[in-house]
Image (cartoon, rainbow, N blue to C red; front, side, top):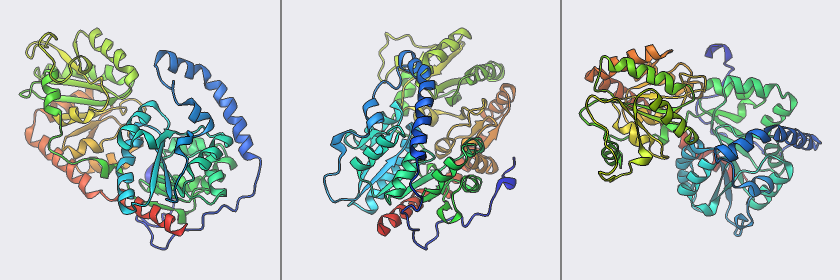
Length: 468
């Protein structure tokens, strides 16, 4: 479905200045919370085999279960009269997107206390790193008792959800207690919208309970309205990731990474970031083809999920390439670690550590943004654009539709539908210094002109705090 056919009238692209709507819910009490609990129990039982595999084979989801099942630890109980804002960011990407919002909210009102919840292990680790472990906790499973205990412990004046982590009991219970639940950087794909619509009254009741949504673009705002959000509770603010994308010519640590990995500064480097299952094989196919024309091209692969690092390393070796793993070549690596030959030897650099993707991007001559050649919705192109790098993606950028569309229209991003098309674009871009610089400059300018969503979101939350 094209964007124009799914638009509903949008009130405005920027925040209205008419204040906030009353928040206390007028929804009558009903047993639907317990119905939701029962649904969650059966869904949880069905999920047990997957969870068991994740815990044993992938070493994921092993910790934090007490907070998930019963609510935050008692040390997070409110002990002062300072108003609290509870920010929930489900995983690593949302935590990074929330960082600047939290900083600017606290700067705008230093009297506030902000606490942060997250769901995944990587999100929790990053949250503790950014905000301090004393105010980060595991988001409770959406059972009514866990949600009530969380709200009682945290005692928030406002709850802020990053992107789309909306759950029935949280939305309903908070609304009944007069606590506004807001969504910043709101993102909702057409596929998710259709699935949520299948829940019928349960879904509409949940979305009607939301106090405000700052949507990333017009189609997303339209989808929220189809699920029951009224147009006076939604604004199109753009993506906060335009703000968090740090514009820079260089970043700290990139030279140390290049030296440790043996990356040749005199040869072009193709970086493929946040790749997904099935995609690395297509990239390696393209790499074989590209090297026939650009024999000195270097390739770096950085899979999105850490549990796939070994799998991708094995695939690289199976293709007859030497796999140079970042985890085995730390900064300042000594000569006892075998160094890959720079000439006449096919090797692939594997970014198998966390938190270094931007370093690889900063070193790149051309970047492929992953999870887009396979149907996974794409990954964030904005942090690449902020580093003034030419961008190539697959066709599936549903998770970043507006950003990828703007970058494409600016001439900063090219989309491909196959490994052969990918190879052709990499050869074209890597061979043309002028075109590469023009694409990079267009990318950076697109980032700069789209800034502002974070400040808009902060202003709206402050309105709710003032109204409360």
